[in-house]
Image (cartoon, rainbow, N blue to C red; front, side):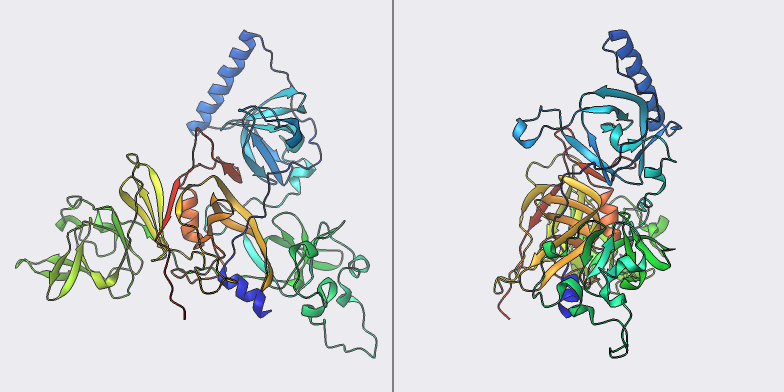
Length: 531
């Protein structure tokens, strides 16, 4: 138990997701199936109607049909074609995935289908671009494959789902609800006890079921067959859709539509309290007790350096009529994000920094970023700077900082090779974004870990990502398996600020040559002395 919880506190970084699959029952024919005529007039008419639909959507006047995913991951293709099999040669340059829709979600669609050999059910063209094969989607919200899907994620708040963790090893994840007699095969602790047996309750799940006497368990050992999708070890996390009662038992339904016995999970009832902030604009009145009209707001040029207020007793200072700095207004809230003007001054042995909001703050009250902007930075280009030494992230638009926060990066423990998992320095681009994705892995010294539906994931290099971490609140210290952990609030804000943009209703989106991902600069790895 201790090892499982230690792993979750240290954080998770692994990439178990694969290219989206589209395994689902064929959707019923619920709209007119048409073959787009190659006749120029017919093609021009269709293009005109599609342009009108897209204009209505862009203007916020969309009242057209919606397309519902019937597969857990329904692929969105750039063109109405599938990539060839690996042994069938190289795909044409325009045959690739743009992203995917998750079961239960829906997207605006142009309802006329394009039928070809790759998709006899017909391809739907989405209003925001891309094509979905009708075999894995439906226009009918009452289609059984749609009606009984899990609820879509909540995109408005910091947590897209509720989360629960397994209370014991061998917690079963079923593809459907089972009767008690059928569950006994997978949950032997449910069997009635004889008079000679200890009837104090369930056995110690650390030693029960498939993991008994197995030593260090691997993820492959937890895979199920048939109705048993998989097993969970103590401390594994899963996203929860809702609870329900069936087959004379109480159950949790997961966000992917599986069933877990209610008593085997505990809901996580807290979320990290820490989060960063958007950088305070030149209008300081955005803060309670702001300087308002007495400030020459907007007159102070920025230096491109961001800072976070790191104490609970910071105050603003302004010049008094004698030209000296004096406190003014209410205290500055902790973790307020500021842009510095770059002209510090010292009075009475105390260093003060001027802000673009035209007030001063003591150096001792600030955590100041040290960004390393790319040499080829374009005017207004979005990019993210991660300072591993300060465990600080700043988002920029050109040279102007717009968001600042603390992070938890990978452990750079060069003296401990078994637990050394640093975040790799370098310049990257976000190449995939997922509302949520499972992260898991096998750790030689501790066993497996698994966190399903880690929120707001932005992959920038291999399995390394910026993502939300709801299982700890210790941001500002390195502790992950290599990813850059963000508080859920910070991850949510940055997810919808970065590129590639996530179209409405999509669950994942991939960068393209036309729409590259936001640049991520990671630098200054921390230097540790042997303890």
